[in-house]
Image 1 (tube, rainbow, N blue to C red):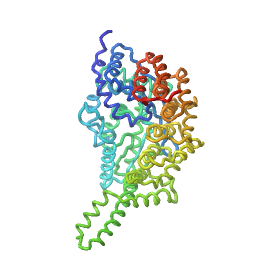
Image 2 (cartoon, rainbow, N blue to C red):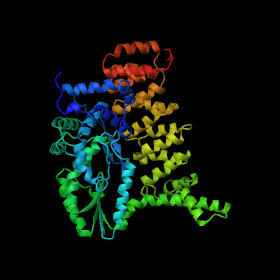
Image 3 (cartoon, one colour):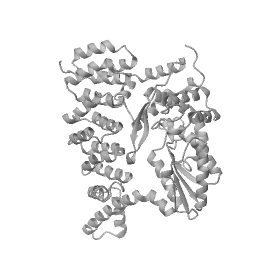
Image 4 (cartoon, rainbow, N blue to C red):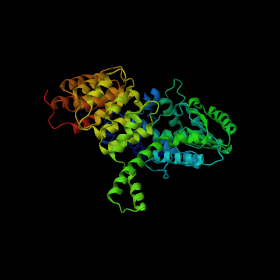
Length: 538
């Protein structure tokens, strides 16, 4: 084996794995058991990756693309990048972190509020908590809106920010920043392999921390040019705000910004760009917050009045302190009333649907174990597919004993279930829960598992469900399907899903395949560790 290329030998794969492991919940797609398989012998797995890099044998695998629902039935491009590739990509961008931070630190928390990096370069967690970053963006916006010198506020968004980033221009920017050529080349090779475009020249995989840093670095010249031009602006990723003295300045910003974006292959989103006065703009940041404050204050005031009647000698200061404390914990009835007012009994629920308010109410009901939103959530699968993750988290909290499986099955079997990604989210929820599925819901997943037209990540998850909840006939079909699986990811899932097969038959099968590859060997080991003590006899 020859000496590894200078630069690639310095990649910290252990730190990269910690970062990938920590952000896995943010990934669009997760294949069953993939983390457990790696961590059966993490050191050997990381060493094998480094060996492939050192020998020049490492080649990134193609990404699996998926369409992720957005509001109003639109979609955004998501993708699955294998854990091996994510670790290599993350390690390469980690190696660039000093140069990226040197270029962008000036703007963090003043102009750029999205994905603010944590101070240590070797921190396992890349960024500050997204909610804290958004709060800082919101507070800065409200502070500027209160300044009387700004009468025209331009808000703008980009058309497909991550998917339109030029890979070659990014490569040039990294070279200009003195990133090691071998590391820079490997980043470019990965991005070209994963690009969703036919020309393989654009796009960063979303939901990967390394991509957030590269996107921040890519946009930095635009932030610099706008600041040097004397404009007052800040942004949260590609959600941009400009504070202008008058309408003419706002128009000039549009002209200048359009030119800067064009030079980087990016475009303003015309439908999401608007010029407003400060009062109108403030509504954007205070709309949901005002409703949430109203819920808190009404609930606290009602409770305080009851306390005051029972304790007539309370002083005003004592009562105000009680109200302040009560606002921290809303009573159950207030959440139920808010659900009715803003959602279930709203006269125009679709036009007035507020994501932040919906999450606030669902979170409050979940903490109380209240099932009042269950039917509304079920009805929201077809109308708000982008809220599936939030709905399933609510189900986990409140529907563990009485799960609405048959209603979920009805939705999955209907023509309204048009997004494979949404079906995957529901399948993953079903796989990870601790109670058995209804026969009706299991039947739906059985159909999907053997439907070749469905995406591989969805079929694999449904096969894992059959391995966990299915019957002997399901295990027999899984066993027969092994030789027909196209990818190793699918074969690995099938191997682990056969752990409940009759012991003798299972062990004979495992012995015949476990030397096919390291992945299959690991899958056999994991399956044996998870297998029941006495599998059913065939």
